[in-house]
Length: 278
Image (cartoon, rainbow, N blue to C red):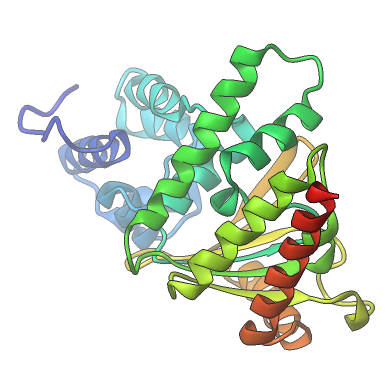
């Protein structure tokens, strides 16, 4: 099975979606009829066909069975799923690149999208103290590549809530943290990002269980991503996303206003610069 008129410049997900539409129509099924044995809606199938939703391997297996496509979707879904990111983060990184708005709460570290090369290197080395320099170089390169989406002057909108611990947690070299805080301050002053700091004085708060990333899109449902040590989960269930959205809203309510947050970020950066000079 292969359609003859696919755009070779399209993304793998778009190609899979186009092939799904061809196979479904060949089988004489509507989107709703195909979705029924998968226990999903017709609109879900439409999102797969439009390439706005990622096809997971379990759906690929069922589609091959229902549409009699001889393993086509499993083979190509596995190929499309290959990523330079860890398995638990690959889908989230892909979604991040498509998002029109990203809201993130960081409890311990500067978010990857805002990390400088030196800071990213210290973090990666802390995670993998025995890794080769080549491995660390690759991890840092991949992390910085994600930040390229901020080269667009307006999209995505990035709004971060940083726990005060993020500002205070220093690695080997205080100058590295100072440089990264200055980088964040520069992006704020360029009106490219919104940042609020959640101060220690806020006490207990809604985000104490860990990091949170919310992603919104023009033509697909919003997502929530929760990450832990070596693991991560991406949610699209509306009730779950709404619950995490409320958590983020509570965090912004407890955090310092953006102007006060910027002042604190720059003050802490100056402190670490002085530590380096001492």
